[in-house]
Length: 366
Image 1 (cartoon, rainbow, N blue to C red):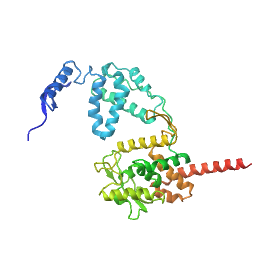
Image 2: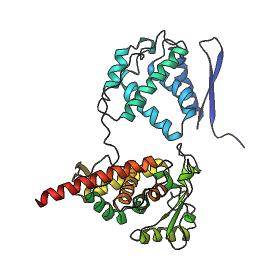
Image 3: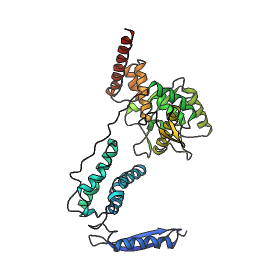
Image 4: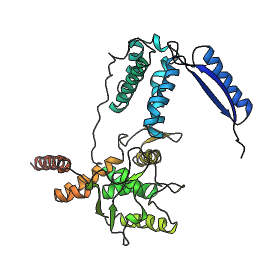
């Protein structure tokens, strides 16, 4: 069967003196030749082969393909490359890597001041690794990022339960949203997002009374696996108020002969990108329902806390268990906590809040 792609190639000399063939493909010979011509021009200008004249932009691509992409999921790799280009390459990518000094990199990362700890840590760790590998490859004589400092980070508000007002709005929006029942199962049964995404039609019993959790999507978002610990395997009762919604989804999934309870059109489980995009949409619906101001279909004044994420739904479930005085050992089982100390932290916090509320009520009566 003939190859549908056309090819063109050139030979280049690497810094160690060895020769390497670069092959370029295209749907037409003209396209392949154009890629070859561009690479040849870059090679002759000293930009294609990594050496002291290599720009940060070129080295970032080489570093990413060699040291980062092979170790990451497709989604994580895409995020890291996008972040590196946004934070560093777009600003100093045209500079020769051998000419970059600490001040240049420090100015770039300083622009992230006030951002989340996660973003700053990724920007810091990856640029340090990039220059470390440049030093190891002989592209620079010293690492300019050794004294690099992290800018001030935004303080994380931490996870909390939804307020009574937020719970009411959540329950109002849930039946109306395409993924409402999916997020509802985290609120009603305390599932982790990766557990909810892995649910199959067989996870729900015949009478829709219980959910069996015995699998989860792995961290790399590539496969369905057993929970990290035995505590993750559990049977959770379905609340009466949520049963009609789940029952309808379950019946539809069975009629369509689906594997997963919540799945994409291609028959696969909801990947991380899909469910996060769905959550953003759901949060916007909550915001609008709460009275957020909009202009041309965009929210300009928010009412709902934008830091809310699906894990807050699970935390709300845990909080309600404590508020209803469910025994802590039972709560530990339902939440799938390996260590009871994690459950105890939630229970202690709720008890303190209930005590403070009681104090305020007593004061109001005097």
